[in-house]
Length: 454
Ligand code: NAP
Figure 1 (cartoon, rainbow, N blue to C red):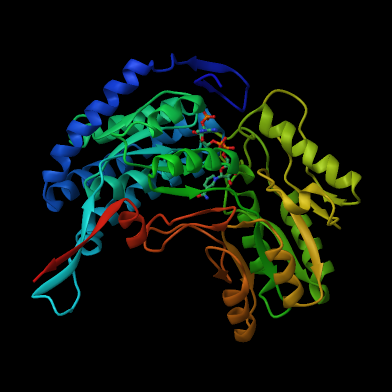
Figure 2 (figure 1 turned 60 degrees about the horizontal axis):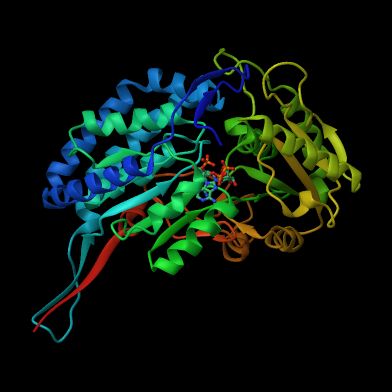
């Protein structure tokens, strides 16, 4: 894939970048090793001071960086600015809490003193996706740098300007030269880096095939990995729910980020007693969304990221309809320039249909009518994915059952799934393993050393 900025709203290719040569990559790894020696020697307060500076730059330049995000991947400008501001908050969070997460953890044993010590590992490769092009990177970079690791970013090939901007932010924030570097390379160049002994670990956020490839190479090289992959999250609505709120939040949960979010609600399980009412409300709510220029105020949904994404969802919808699904509304490509697609709803999804098992990475909600919570959970858990989940109900027993039985890395009750720096984030099953954010996120790439002093 060419490394280039293509505006998904106009299809115009704005800028193309020369990929880094192997020699440039090798030099970057060498710099990363040198920077690691310096960064690990910095006291935590010094790392925190510089991370706070990065947070301030993110906050102050949210408008400018937001424009680049919208230009490169098509989310609405308002959403892009909100994403960059969230990054400032995430960076602040780790600047403020790293000392607590990384403090020596004394354990009473027969030794004079014994404890866990959190030490950095070295250069870590981060392979990142375009859908939250700043947030995905910062939620790796902030804890990595606070722990004393250095970062090498292989960003998605369609967001090179975002990738270079992030590198520049860490430079301007005063981190050592080489502490955080962007490598403009395609996916095929990742293996060589993973096999380089100077690179100690890897994290990948993206699709299953990319995750499986990185994990298998790191398996051979015995290197730790964190994988944040796809999802097909359940969103359950039971009769006791506040239906107006459930539909409003469910609409956002499915259509946020132009429908291209890993933790979007993708499958809606609605109790039979309220199904017709909820379906009608969802239809009205989806129909009221404005699709159009992502830079314009008032636009709810911008274009999909590229022609491939548009072709994929069109084929998924066609297949589902062929297998007996019914179109409630939308779910169609828009004629003309740009990769626009109308938010849509399908129901009556056959078990044999691909749509039943696959992730739909576009604003298409699949509705399932269920007779009970047991049935909702059973179908929800039949998915190969297990990223997050949500349930809307006032019934405490139903809330408990969903929390205990839904196979997912998170369950949100009367709220949509989201990522919050204070809480761990990640999936199970084919959605990946390991956790980002919170204490788990910063310890993921630490050598948790056992210290025993007799
Ligand atoms: P993708 O194709 O897997 O791309 C993600 C990153 O992996 C890009 O940098 C890509 O580089 C690279 N890549 C692709 N194939 C590779 C390979 N064989 N070896 C090494 N690197 C490789 O993912 P996408 O389709 O753009 O992103 C959407 C997917 O990401 C969805 O499934 C979504 O659910 C998931 N996602 C998950 C989370 C989470 O936190 N769990 C968050 C966001 C997105 P190129 O761009 O150069 O191909």
